[in-house]
Length: 280
Length: 280
Image 1: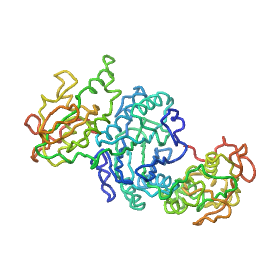
Image 2: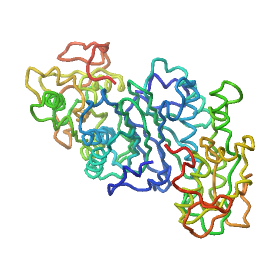
Image 3: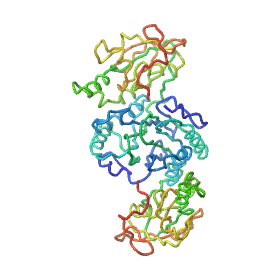
């Protein structure tokens, strides 16, 4: 997040993952995510998976705006052998049907740093944001959380299926279908609880989550971890009570009038300063 | 440049500094430049100057398209003290009247890597590129070259004026005025000779440069260095013979039908494989 860099007058919209600007009678949706070796991916991971993830995290930001991707710009720090990165990039761009429009490469020493800018076109206006939830709205999540956590542990141990961690899917189609129906929406990149807390704060209310209702892709004794782990790229959204979402999603809580805490878990306030997820 | 990463079918336009796409009945101009400590700036340089340069190099790419800036997205690797960077960023964004729309920050070890995406709106269509020069066109350059070289040497020696190196100006207004009048245009970021050679290759012809006519902001015995050094961010463009450019610019050469070499300097072929400028 750029909030700590954003004290000058020109800054705007910096609480959101995406910028939305009006451009030529359309809404342009822009996002830029960086990844650094050792922070966002493990040293020694297959560069094809790193490329896939770099594209997916940006596509997921577009998904949360109901935007269709128009293109990407890559900022790439060259390493000795770039072959596998190109393979994974190609696979991801083909999967998401998005062209590489340009970018830059640099030589560099030290851990590799990558950046990707994704450009999208909003399919629904007004473009939904984190800030529109109203008290009484129902909170939903697509799919389940915890798969990436289990996948990372599998990758580290060398035992089990690591695909969900290595190759997350951004839910572009789901975001486009949801956009006209939601009051607020975001993708879960940093953990369900942390991101739900952000949605509550952006919407200036309190979100009450029932932990038992959260679908997890992990053993039951890992439920708490699964709700605090990131990298699943599911969509978290609110919609008015009584209006069923147009795609499969699970009701996990409800928006309340603002209380002292932005987030209640099973009725108890969650300390906003506690580590809720992966803050980077 | 991304050419070495761009073998997959989705890639396009990667020979240019900018991508131009049609969006909502307008032409959207996009560019992304990276800078790495020790490669693009000196370790220990004032971060305010680094921020200024990061913004300026991207604004210069927009200038060469005759585009007006709409916003920027920043990819920033946090360091211990980010204060001076924010100061310089603020100064640059205020100078170019462009808002910070968003971006990302990462923590990281090792040399700092920065990225900036600039988004612009073309003021003239078709948007000019490097590829439109015709045999017989005159080659022009704005201002002079070599000031950044002298500035960098002043910064390194601690003696003399380093402003041209530390705080380059992108020629946004000049680019917008030139766009309807040029057959090809680019900014000089990597050295006059290297960039002129690229313009010639993109336009599929040979460019003949008269070295004595090149305005230099350096002692006469540094003329050759000044033509090979980058970071001046002047505009290099071609226009039909007999049509005076609408802004001050110096005639430095002429486009010829394609010969074996893309570039002739004082009538002699220049080896395209020789180090002509700052290739990064």
